[in-house]
Image (tube, rainbow, N blue to C red):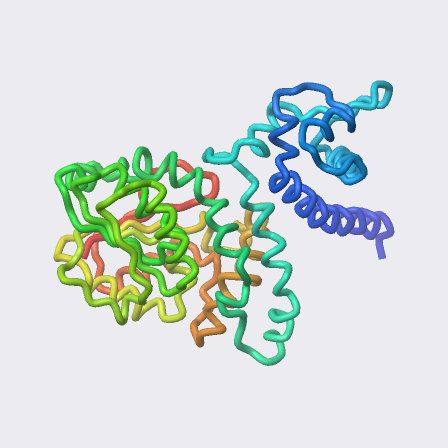
Amino acid sequence: MNKDRIKTFADRVYRDVSGAMVTGMADIGTRTGLFRAMAGQGAMSVGDLTAATGLQARYVQEWLAGMTAAEYLEYDPEAETFTLPDEHAYLLASEGTDHFAGGLFRFAPVLLGVVPQVTEAFTKGGGVHFHEFGGECVPALDLINRGTYDQRFTSYWLAAMPEVMAQLETGVRVLDVGCGAGRVPINIATAFPNSQVVGLDPDASSIRLAETEAAASDVGNISFVCETTRTYAPDAKFDLMTTCDVVHDFAEPEATLAEMHALMKPGGVLFIVEPKAADRLEDNIHPLGAMYYGFSLLHCMTQSLANGGPGLGTCMGPARTEQLVREAGFSDFQTLPIKSMTNAFYMAKA
């Protein structure tokens, strides 16, 4: 065996385990406000940061050391001070923006917590149901998407469909399938008060959070339904349907998309957001691809398999997405030219 290759791979293993530890420390930095307290403040000592946050000094000291070792912070050994560079604060201390990374740190422990159940599924089959991920899951997913949806969904993403934007201004019926914490329907309802918006999700905890968020946003043209597309029977059909980061999770993708088609008016528009992954494995060999396969194994795919589904997985890819949508009865499928490092965007017509 090549000893140099062994050493190189050992370094990679240590780096990967280090990344898991850094994720936990970074989540603590987000939860406690440590990153926010350091943003724009320049060099800070342990005492400075402890005073600014009111946290326990020994924990702050160890956290600062860990974040320095991970190169999230810069350290001056002579002055014994720590600095959060502005470029790092852009991602770490920017909650509510479309570039905030804190949701990823929050989500990772949720997924690692189900490793024993997923391991068992390797031998027994099945998977992990959504409710088994615990109470942290829905808020973590919301934290990942909140800033992006708030800042980009209506002003940039939907703007790629000018005819749809015009209809929304006039007033149409909109259904968001798999609405989760309600961020998408709330943004649509807020931006287009003449339209009526419904958020649909089978998870009761998600719907409760969505209703709370909608009440706080003071939007009146919105409602939420805790059902599936199979059981939902609205009074009228919909002009626009959105589904974001959901299609690859479906336990019955063909049937669910067909049910969505049946809920739409003829000529209605379906807008889909899916993870940006290539159709071929060899084109997904990069950090984002590895992260998505991890999300898939520990969350998306296993949920589908838990419900007897096909387990399409996070990296389902555009070709499979188009095939499913067309087979459900939709036409005029197209990829929208929206720039994003992490998402792909599609539209089709009923």
